[in-house]
Image 1 (cartoon, rainbow, N blue to C red):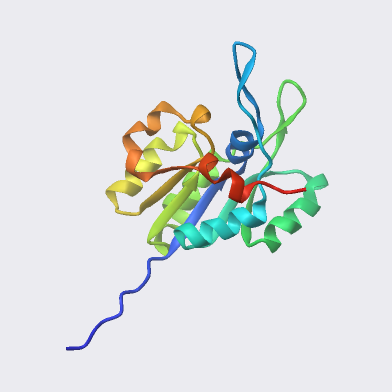
Image 2 (cartoon, rainbow, N blue to C red):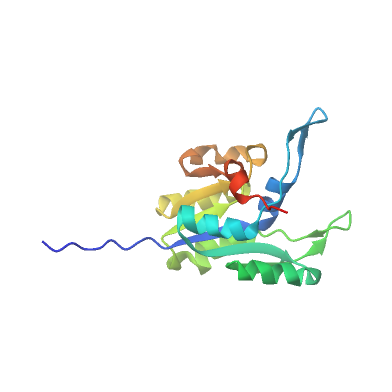
Length: 177
């Protein structure tokens, strides 16, 4: 009897950089008390984590483009992220904003859809509910990595078997000085 070696599934990650950054770095307060202390993510360790834990071959990091951040972008590329830029605009308080949700949906559901077997998402945002439902029906939804429980959308409740909470990996992924 000849044994056929099973092909490992091709896994891509689609990362909402704003959701990841805010979900890990910001303190969350309740009644003026800190109930969640933010931390600084080591992106090099995070890329390795995605490979080790989920076998992510390509990690697409969706991010608003700011010319002043070119050094950061070079580091992220060196760590193995493929950057997908969104032009930024200034919001009412003058801060740059680059909402990447549409780009993530476009890449996951159309541009890259035929190139992967499973998709891993990094976001606690409920805006991706319809994408997750679609990919689940197609058998392509891998894991949904939620930066922290406090920023998780209630729309993700129906994806319990797919969720992973990044806070559980804090000690492994925190940036050491």
